[in-house]
Image 1: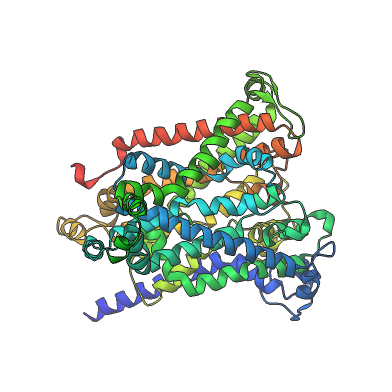
Image 2: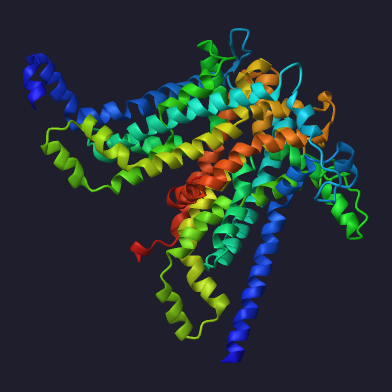
Length: 283
Length: 309
């Protein structure tokens, strides 16, 4: 019996040591970047193997924040918050509305449209980026935020799917009772369904914000005035070899650009994990 | 309804029509229909037309028949290079990522006090991995005086390899970046593993099956639907990779890391060959569609669905 207990303890310790060490290796690159952003640029290049700075300095953040060409990172952060914020509101609201239609209404050709929705969900942005560019160019939208934001207001496949699953879990009795009381379908959606699907709305909002925040490709295609750049695109321009190679400042701004994502990740982790587990959303 | 009886008769009928579920359904899914036809189907069809033209955004397109497709397949060596690099990337990064995801998921399926912490740490790279910030970090890590070489040196290996400058290693830095982001697949596997009934393992144990046996005979077959789902998702995403190649390597050295999407982007926007870009987009749609189709067809052979048997 004692042998058995000992053996179990040893296995447990080995398990934790291994899992912990591997987790440390996984997180090391990010940790290294974050801590290096407080090092002198020379130190980053000369003693790359060190994790902690020899001399802690905020200099990189001060020089980095100045940005390039007279545009500070304050502008870029503001732009990112505008783009990601409005896109998220649009994606969450429109996806909830569309999901309700699919989950609770019967109408002609429903299964056809549902298949189309799944198809749209699988279709990557890269496939339609050039066709869309031609369209938005005709509409005179290139150079504005419209090509980035407007499509978000027309429902996003993953979020529609997530909401449908959630709505299907709500008992039909609630709808029927409300119907007996004379509520229209629209009123049922707003008064009964919406308050009940808060978790899936929150999950959609988190994913939407993080994806829009990270999005770089659509800014690359549609934006040309530095005044309108989001952080992702500004970072790319900042890191271009022509802009010199102040790695300290670059690391500082890169770390700062991940900060909102970290905060969301740490506070909303539960929603993220459940969202992925239930729909298989990509991270 | 009191309110309705007060309003004029015509208005009430509109209200009633709007409230019929088949009409209401269309009202609710209207945003999706507008987006689907306006921003997906219409542009796709238009771009199919443009793929038969020489088209620069400033000039009017001129019809050249199949010329774009012929050039692509017969005389554009860079097209084939980019296709090869993307294929290489997908063929290695997708299986490696899934194997990693499965191993770690099996490690974490046992719940301990630290499970939540481990899960968070392993998942984090998936959240930030496609960002520009991480691309910049990767570029520095694999530089000849970066952290990878510095660590190798401090363990006694005198490595000064310019990882990003050699045709045989550059693509692997991108593959490693992809494998590093195994977190979301891991979470999907984790929920798949938790759905396998414990009774299966117990009766196998009674029959004297060892760990490896149980893994091959129970865990793997029961996970095939999850593996299938992950595989399709990851393959599509793999072919679409853009940011990594565009920022970290810019296709260098000698186009060995020039991804298909990057070459498509260059043609359309840097070289002003939008017609050629449209043709490339359509070839990609066909190719990814074909692979998805083949995978769906292959399902019968290896994916195990409980209800069927």
